[in-house]
View 1 (cartoon, rainbow, N blue to C red):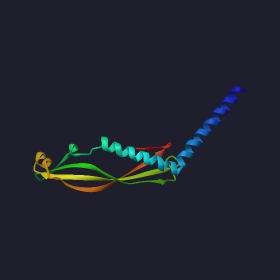
View 2: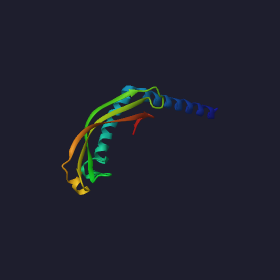
View 3: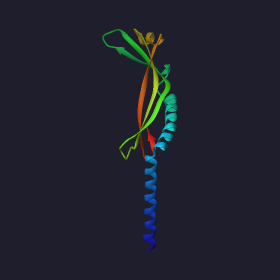
View 4: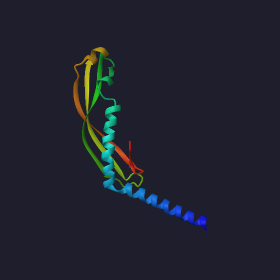
Amino acid sequence: MGKRFALAILLVFGFSFLVAVDVRATDEKEACKLFESFRAEWMKKLTQHGMYGPEKISFEEIKGQKKVVARYSELGEFKEARVKKTDTKGCPFVGILSYEEKVCESEGTSRNEAAKGPFACGTRTVTEVFRFANGKWVY
């Protein structure tokens, strides 16, 4: 009887844990709160480890022309973050994050000339979609 009782206890606790995880995964208010923290951390990681800044310059040689384009990006302002409910049990929510990215370009006949500038900059909006799985936001 001791083994059956222990097995029954394990099953009850195991089932309770699964229910608790599922409740958390379907609570939209909690998912929104967690996405706000995730968003702040994601933007921090982009700032620290992203491919941004003039030191991350790239070059594109235009074939058939004696022209080189120097290009780099700057991380801009956060624009919007929102959470949408889905019909999928394994991913009950998706998070949509939008932020600005400034792209700067300069042209020249060589890499050195293009890198000297002047750089003309334009802004574009970047939108990323993240999924909520197993009770947390996933990159």
